[in-house]
Image (cartoon, rainbow, N blue to C red; front, side, top):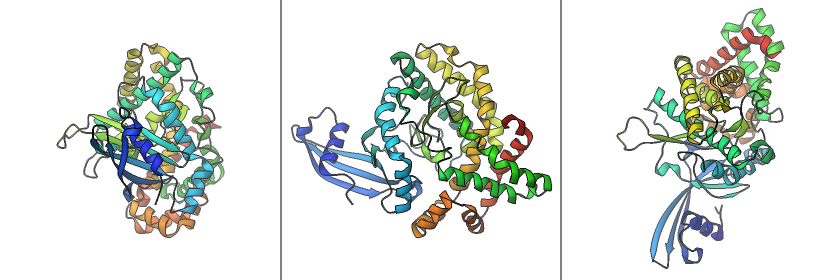
Length: 415
């Protein structure tokens, strides 16, 4: 399989070793391997690339390693969906035009370096050389959440600094890039996800009363579409570049030593659904998608306060007005955007909590049907997984319960 030609491989190695003249670099060997199936994405295929190059002037040899994201090659329906949504065009532009400018104002490494991009491929730094996901035997603690929140605060403050110090508006400059690919009425994945929420709510044992069923069938879907407004640029708080997808597999941690219990740094990957919007969305999405509900409720206030103090610290470091976002403004905005977080949790939980062995098998053996599940009707998929994965139904019903309870109590806020 040839994802990249010889000229591109030499260019990638030269960008990795900028101190060496391109004419002095010779490619000795290249090796491309499929990434782990555990990392298989819904919006692409992953590969590991290894290049052996030589600087003939020294002479000296280098072994370079990369992580590649490409448009799906093996799965035609999935490829067509990615092309239709312009996923790679968006992420390529974010990596090449936006993130390097934001990184200039950050106090730490915010994202993996991008060495090469096309509208169908991204060649990124292989973070797994120095970072890793948490192991299944490792549990999140309050320190893990705070580490990610501090990272997000750095990203958000650097985003504001880029605008303030270089006199630009991210939304205006990159309006054609920062399209909404997630909670968009034109996104079939999103619409089928809302229908799945209604389907699951109708099955929930606690909503079998006539009153609850009427609410679910007559009102719930329209209320769920309010999320579309909540993820647009806010009119009540300073907007920033948000990652918008900080779930477990998009967060990698750095440990000083293999024996370290707690990481000392983290890095986020996958900027496909990044958007210029309220910073509270990144904060709430992390807490709702990664933290178990019982833990989230216990640490919620502490995490909001920690993020806000981190944001103010970074604004101060950058010489910016700390009142750009006040504490009162931030907390009110968290209340306003909470519904978006609840909906994202309910939308994503059925996919993120599906065992990779099940989702990968269905996608490889039944690609057409899997595409239908994701973009048309998920009810059959959900029932199939409930039958073969113990505890799945109980898990995916938790966000349904919290979301429906919230909307039944706060319906007037959104009508």
